[in-house]
Image (cartoon, rainbow, N blue to C red; front, side, top):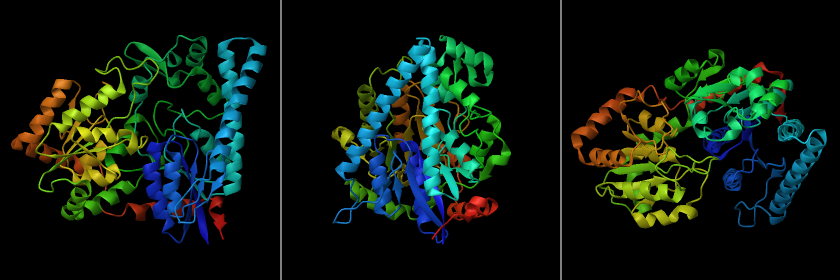
Length: 491
């Protein structure tokens, strides 16, 4: 008999770490993982296919179980299922907006009340839907990739606790609110120009932040009012994972201190490590052979060192754009970034794509002299000699591996996460980016200095003892036994 673990995936960036967890639990005799793809993000079917290929059960965004395979044994989504899902989503959205508009317009005809009514209806529907899924699945433990007020994660936690089901967060990122303040700085939905936002800010000041001379709300005012009225508001809305989960599985000493400095309760924090750490330490132990295999796979010269770069995701689509950046369009940004790193001829230059995009859509950049990795970033970082990224959470992996980093803040978000790490070189200007690229790949003394500085910080950013999986099992054992939900077994 096995205890069921329901793993809720809200966004593609959460999937990577949650998929590692699902694979770990799949090999266990105690636990039975089920992946629930809560939101229909662009690559959710690809991610579900990965799970189903390993016989990990999946639930689609409409709560339907997906267990189909074709005659060749590979995963396939029947067109009828896909069409049914898309039709139901479109139909629900149409009814949702029309109903809200009619009801709100009848009430007073004001856009603020329309938004408020829509938000109440949204949460009503989410409560009803999520409760149905939890009832059907009856998990012993619920796992989330994060708890953010922009998603419905608070509803999951609220309903799980009503069923005596503990909630574990397996975070893949960290934020003290600066990221959101910068991302939404130019969006009028998040400032106090609208009356509903001003009311929310007056009634619940914890949702506000003063940033660059402007007062911002963490989410639009209607969501603030609804979450507060429903008892879903976290103590620290601007801080990721500051809600009411039972445990936040922390991956390193630095991440733990980060959360403590933000005001998160130490009672919730459990130092476990990241499953990516177990992946990376295994690769580091076989680095020479693994690197030779990679070079053969990508048709590269295995005598050259590797410069690895994570291509930044597109944030120029945000409302109001990003006028602080040197780039007005994403293709322009990609071209400058890729052609700049491609100039480094004494290194093999490899690019990791963001989890939200497909290889086929970016294959053209290989014509500029780089190769695109077909493996996950955690598998690639330990094989690299220099890592280039844009204020990415993956930088912490390079630090843990002792690999020098160029942190090119291409959107000029001015995040402070890695400023105290001497092995991470922060740049914002095009010319500085090109200069540092040239220096670290050609000046041996400078490069070796950065290696020493990075190794000094490494142990604080990862747990490379190979026992993260073991600690997660111990955590789940303790939590399942502590709650009555632990008696829900899969027979």
